[in-house]
Length: 329
Image (cartoon, rainbow, N blue to C red):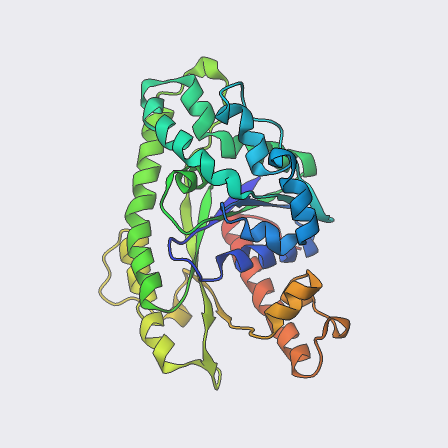
């Protein structure tokens, strides 16, 4: 099982849409996928599920969501419950999110330092997301786990990220995404170092499945850049050209004098266009943009846009699969 988190502390860069479409793409090509919604806004769940189904899942204390699995820990009555996995289609399952997940933040913050004292109960809290994902992936035989998190550097994201072997950074070609990169690099290194230190204090007798906390940067994806005559418009190009250098300095902790252009950067996984009118059609049809049909309203110029969208996401899935050592048929 491979775990990949999609993370940027700058919101509005298309992170959740990226996870949603990649989950569908991998599933379509025969890779069993588990999508995990660890964003307290639950936007990924709302893309997969209609409001009636979400209402059902959130009723009765949200027992069939990520929050429900955490209830025994939060109530201090026991360990995690086995999670509910919502079957989306063949090869694709979802651990639904819940707005109440934000209530778990304080408990995570409280127990992070306690791990340094070797407290077994603290490790059960900090490893909860990892163990929930192991259980959920086992239920559906998932080979790949895609994790969506919120745009912040809080305790929930720290616990989610230490459960990720790899991290993909969705970006927009703007000043705010560049600043987000500068924040993320030191934070990821601090979290990685902090977790390694804590792992050394985990009692062998605890029998707790703990993540390695690798969270290795897999690369970045530039989302929704403007296109004119097959070239990014000038306003975006200014910031786009700076991404390779900032990525190396902030994320990889390397000093570079002459970084490559974005188009030649091996860490650039994709430059995804803004598909504009396809997204509303996709949300209405409750399917990914690249799966839209004429019956969904994809007619005329939309037909070619759907084909281009499919190729873009398939190529991105191939690159991610190669870096994650996953066979993509």
